[in-house]
Image (tube, rainbow, N blue to C red; front, side, top):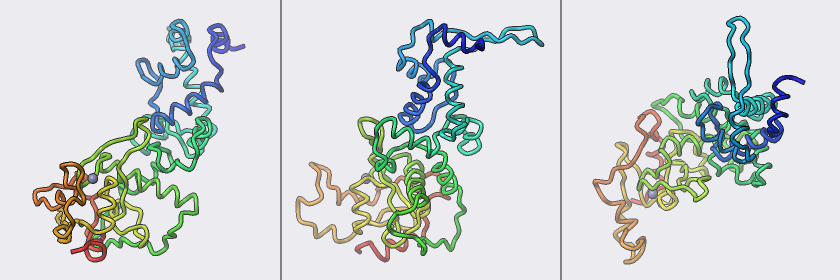
Length: 309
Ligand SMILES: [Zn+2]
């Protein structure tokens, strides 16, 4: 029996398999990513508490003798066990290693893969049907997000995807939908571009804001950063039915029809939802990086085809 195995037995540490499962559950809870295991890191203590580890177990050291340098290197047994478990998950393609994630997201983190995401959902007994709405990152979706946020902006951008299938059937189109959603709501810092509303569910698992298509999905609008905008549910609806549109200088233009709305319509207590759209000083919240703002060709189409003058 190796020295490490002896220590694990002596300190009655949890099995590696159990730690692997705890890591998958923790990844799901923490949005799909976990930093490398180090002291003072929240997740390290969180999982230790889940197993009810005592102080002795948490602070046990493994001592490795470096013969060449004639010195002893110490590593926490618990951190070592977490690393072994994460490493096994990476070998089974359930997570990507920090070195691999770094190339994609510039962050040194363990990141769920789609396979790991599915396994974690099963472990937590969460139906896979709501996968699309969970703010959990995966390697495959992050690849799409990276592609979307780094794609080149061209003058003659075509917001239509002629080959688009309206009904999502393939795994590829489901991934693309999640990539679009994530790229948009991250670019807008989880806020509605019109009113700035930013709120998540009480369990922190989902955001209220939605990724709206400018040329809508129904008209085969592209799932990319130039054809998207983050809107709360109210403003998403109002945009889709043409109560307001966006001008080339990124200001808001409200429909003149607002004048004909019966008294009492569109009000939430004192807040007049429709009248607020007509405020000329209203500033919309677009991403700072102008290259990832909506494309003129998409907003022009909305102005001409959806907006009610
Ligand atoms: Zn809003």
